[in-house]
Length: 288
Image 1 (spheres, helix red, strand yellow):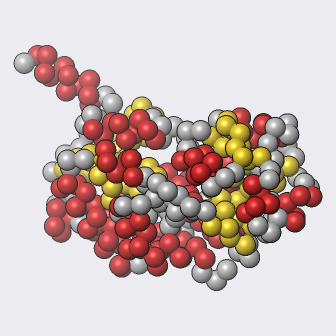
Image 2 (image 1 turned 90 degrees about the horizontal axis):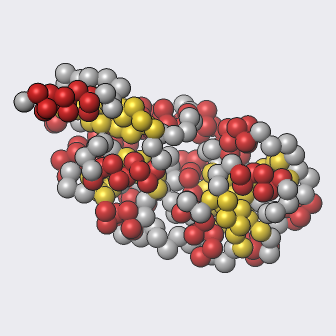
Image 3 (image 1 turned 180 degrees about the horizontal axis):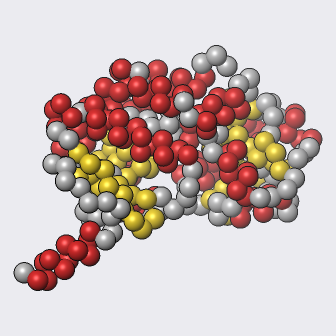
């Protein structure tokens, strides 16, 4: 009995608060600090609130230990946490249960190219083929790397921030970065002489979804119900439109020619989420 009590105390130490709510939903803590993370938590809170009439109250508690995306997902099936956020793929949908509401309106699949300032080649880019003749740099840990390779791009593998150094040193010509992240990341990279290439953007299906443990259909149903209600009421889009990163993304996207690429891993439930939420996915392009 004493051993069980000790285990309970140790486990409680992994989470940020203790809850007296009827249901406790355990969330991961990210290894990076970005306003999008706070936004994701706020959207989840709205969905929980919107589903209370059917499922009762719930409290969200955070794992104290920061973990990366793949670890967040593995923690689901190990019952360490109940929710993870990740980009949708066929492989992930086999191992985990996706909640089919795009959390950032598909913006993780919209990329602008970070380049060396005043590189004259990029003012003349008018096709995907022209980009394929240059060298991109991308993290091998991300789906974006394989998407670029599968679309015929030449890609230098690197880590997230060392890629900026590779670009600065001329080892690569451009670094495709998410349109909702690029401004903050350029500042954090602290590398002089870089800029966002003008006139064009890359786009491919890459939805960022909430995932739960494969067998946790009750939580998946609750979150699906809650998110669907906030989407239908307009609360989901309203919260997103209030975010500074979203406003910056819309501003950067305005007037650009968009080159569409394929993502062969974005089928099945990923495609279903895309088809069900076309209005949400089109929101960033409004008034452009």
